[in-house]
Length: 191
Image (tube, rainbow, N blue to C red; front, side, top):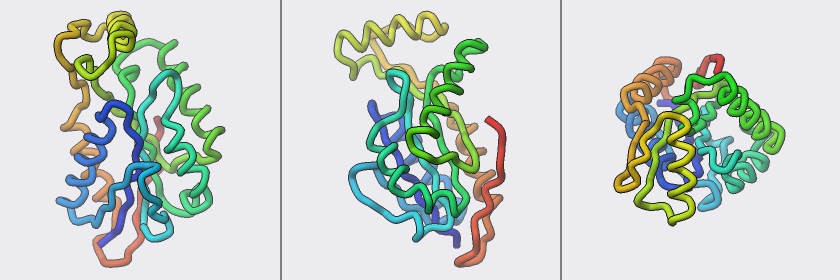
């Protein structure tokens, strides 16, 4: 049975929810999965057949705790199959400028961490208006309005495509060898 690590950082909780969902799906499909929040432990990637790193974009970058963890384990991450799960609402926009901006943020992450994943998967997050302070709520409302998202701040809005994430888990599981101790094969995919 392949052993996988999901290392994540979450600001408003959606990336944690996505990571837990992915861990549950992969376990249901036969993988042995450990889930850890960056900065709250220090599982060693060398103990795993493959690693999924998940973070969300906030204020033009990813969480510093995750960048530090990746930088610390960069050589181990490069030695095995890996996936970077980027959680962001910007992927919902069909706008070349937004796409270019997201690509710059991914490139900046690679420069800051010194690591490029074998595969990148972009996942839409959520607007957690009810959890934001007033200033962040107004800023997110403005950003969401420009992108065509909901500006109703009286409730939260989830944009994560759970069916797509379930299919992604099945794809990852299909790329693994089912025998104990077998290597994990996470194929290279474009962004």
